Image 1 (tube, rainbow, N blue to C red):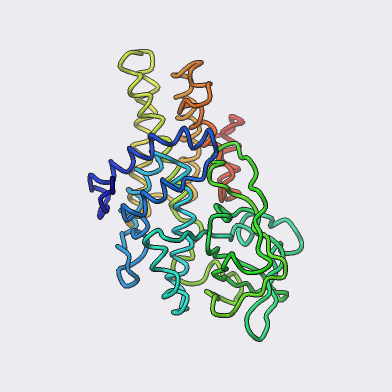
Image 2 (image 1 turned 135 degrees about the vertical axis):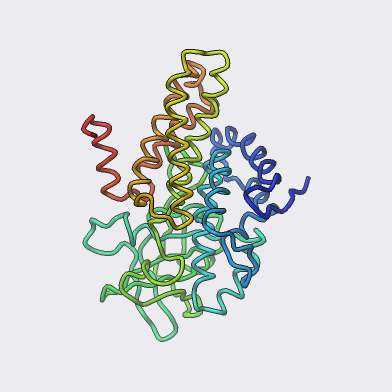
Length: 359
């Protein structure tokens, strides 16, 4: 059955899409299958249009509405929603670039869901930063660039027609290119099995002296290319939003168990109030109100998602420790927020909390 196009976070069609995603999450996790069908549903429902303005054929949702949409999707299926964040990151950077040819050629099929794009940029911000030499290097030529090396964490690279990837020149300047994955020298080794979200097929993208035409250049060469232009903020709200969404799924489960387990009343009430406060601050930040910093919000979101999912496991007892039960899956998925684009101050705060050193 064709899904109805979702035009706002209050659209009943969003609930129907989330129901489908929720019903398939366990099987996808168990078999580590790429969620091709789930992504097709999202394309049918217009999800990929949320993040791009009407001038490029999208719906151009504001940040508050995007946050509300992500909260619903991540509570239903974190893996699918995480993939969408990587897809939307690629699409937003293509749409925000000054490369009219790339926009015209790539965006229509990306917005409809006909093609898939992802990003390979973690090595420019958090991953592999301790190494003395950039892991993905660029050489400028008369016609474009030669890319050599690898991007360590790329979601769904083996399924992508395009990867928005960053590389560093010898003088320290950086570029972003919309890399066609069918170019000679591009390869995707088998993705590793992860503790959670293995179905996202996140792993390396390798470039062996890949010649990229200048027509695919999106930004640069410039110092700190990730800080340039519209949509270039890597420290935004989406990671915290997905953590809050996963926490809400766990607490919804606790709420259902509460009807026959009075002993869960006090901890469930405390966690639910914390979730409500966190959601309120998240939406306030999305609306432009500086009620706290993004880092403070991320620290609180990380803390809550770890505790809420483990509380769900406690409530589920032994059944929750059996593969296929959502509580066990949620606990594994919650660990992802300790490593996904997690700034050092946030990690330090989480470590202090785990060590009992928090105020």
